[in-house]
Length: 258
Ligand code: CO8
Image 1 (cartoon, rainbow, N blue to C red):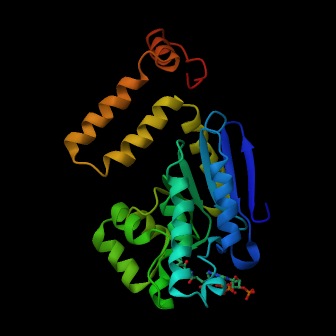
Image 2 (image 1 turned 90 degrees about the vertical axis):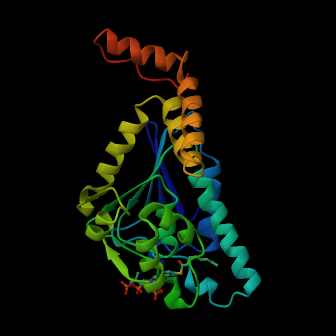
């Protein structure tokens, strides 16, 4: 792959968007490579993914404007659908994905972070949906994921004004969960990823799917859904070992996902 670097550390996979000359902007090749990478993830081997951008200036500065400039209506729609298919593949991974946002996350870059389960940012991170200033709507999910995450009012503010939001404000409005000095970001992301990876994989998977599907349901249906995933954990080796260890006042053996 030319623009996607991967590194596996234990059960954690680090994906780096590596196109520093264009601030990691998403052209079709970057998106294709990201899709191939995501589709190749084996949840037996990978229990958490960290996604970041190369360098310390940009996570991803958006979709590639040079590549989009001369698109027809049909090509624009197709590109939007393609980008959405990549981000949906990421969102639907059976393992959690942490966006470690290390600088500009504009347009498609912010939308990539929105498709992740958890967003943490460096203190120099800048978020924004500047598409309207380019004469286009957001096209890789922000009109849908941003209001679900930060509420309709704040999402409309960002999507209508194109205003940029620095890390401290992103934290305040719930766009990110934590902010760290840039030099600590990856270390903190890996610590979080390893903490997730050490937990019971069946429980983590059930939690992720229950939240995702439950948000599209009414509360009653969502609670029934949760009971199903809760029940699924019982009689697994991990549940028996986790509860036995607690009762026997010892550390559990590493979870196996069985
Ligand atoms: N696309 C292509 N190239 C880019 C992009 C981009 N989004 N962002 C930066 N670059 C390139 C620059 O052209 C420049 O290249 P070169 O050195 O060859 O001139 C290089 O990266 C460095 O950028 P700058 O010189 O501009 O660096 P600055 O530090 O001066 O500025 C900024 C950094 C503020 C991040 C600035 O680069 C910028 O404003 N970039 C564009 C941000 C933007 O508008 N992003 C949104 C794009 S639209 C989008 O993402 C829509 C997604 C949905 C698509 C749906 C399809 C239908």
